[in-house]
Length: 310
Image (cartoon, rainbow, N blue to C red; front, top):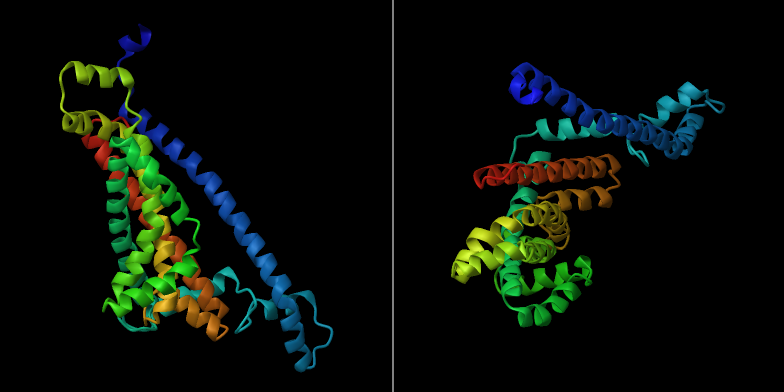
């Protein structure tokens, strides 16, 4: 009664609580990030020290001090493990020195991989949704198809990717499509499994109520099964978009293309450019996080539009 009499909390109070909750979320993430950076520098020092000591010895410094050794270890042109600041400099310079569209510009590679990822994600999501609807509606279809779906994910993607490229290449399909198909192969599985479980998660009492109203199967699907499956769907889509990115990068390795983060990684490994490899890895991680956040944003919009509380 006291709370009801007091009415809703002031807006400034709600804003303060929201900022406090956001701060509570950011602090652990920042702490872990700082810890990772410290460990990274320590690992870079340990791994680069032998190479740095050899270079100092060539300069006549046979007994270098700790500061000399650390400076040399952290400024190697081709280090065994580049430091975080070297990776950041590589990302910035390779993104700004040349115009977007140039094969030496990192953003060009990001755009190419993002296109393959999104194409594969759309194809894989549609395939997964189609399989889930079929398996949720027909038990015999689930018993016949599900074992093959699970078995398909036991085949290594590195073995399938070259075959997909060769087969589609012989059919005249090159460029984006082979990479999108490889990406689709990885991302349809979580959507199919998650959505099947979600479509069957509707409350049995609500199902009986719909049947008592003589609702058609389509009405039951649209008004009960589909809303109940939304949390499962978006959780699956977040996994699927990250898997689609992995598939796109793997698909770029055997295609011999000029653009893509996979191509960038391959070129870096050929020429021993470890800084370039790490820059591509970090950018791929950032791209994955961005895509997952985009799915999370779509989830909030859809759930809000459907009257959910999330």
